[in-house]
Image 1 (cartoon, rainbow, N blue to C red):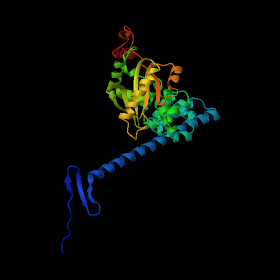
Image 2: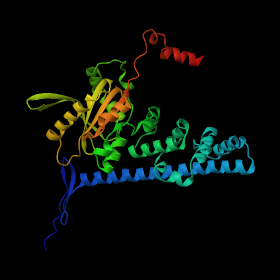
Image 3: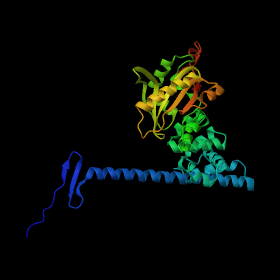
Image 4: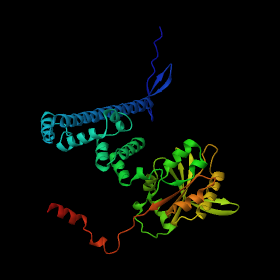
Length: 356
């Protein structure tokens, strides 16, 4: 009787491969990679579940404190007593300080239990919620930044950065003609994509800077500029050269928006908006449509970034214009005047003062 031949595993650069009669050659490395991915996904789901339950617990503690203070006349000292008793019972947990329990009380006063377990609030960590309570005074703004943080996957620190830049307050505030030039859903999304004003303080440039210097600074700090533009923008290039009728023209900055599936031409102006800027930008957009745009791409969008704008003049310039264009201003911040920066304390002096 012939002995059954047993295939041996083969070792290759990609890992150990086990021959399999029914499925062909089994790639161990690919299988292991898939397992790792599933384990990580399970860890994320577990972490989200733990976070959701922790946030719910904190809300319930805060709600019960509020209830007893309102209905039974408990004073503020109950928070100190509760913090002491919970820390004694759960010494390994760091969330039962007096300050954190006061946050639980404020958290319960700000939201209902149904709201904190649903999107977007249910997708945020407790540290996100602390920042929302600390940095913002209104329910509307807290909800707006919660939506942005959940949608874009912002960490707590990135969310605080956007709160300080007033990103939500500036979102969708650019003056545009999108309703007349884009379809319904694209029009709404494109409007929300643009802001006014754009905060370019990270460039460290003074007022009166030349356009070439501003353009180069944005390219040098393109990662920061992309963060300010918002999610979905991909950088294509600066001073993109296009030839039209034997003449060459340069676009200041060219981006592609991944959600709108279209090119975005950004034209920089260091002065006040003027109506002729629209015609220049429209020409560049036509060149992009004819030379770069594919059939699958949406209509090219133009963004004029000016140092300042007259809203009425901008509205007149865009009325009855057939191409989708937005007009926004920007703020540089500028340097400190000479003589002041040298008078500021340095880090060592600050540390010494804090010690004292």
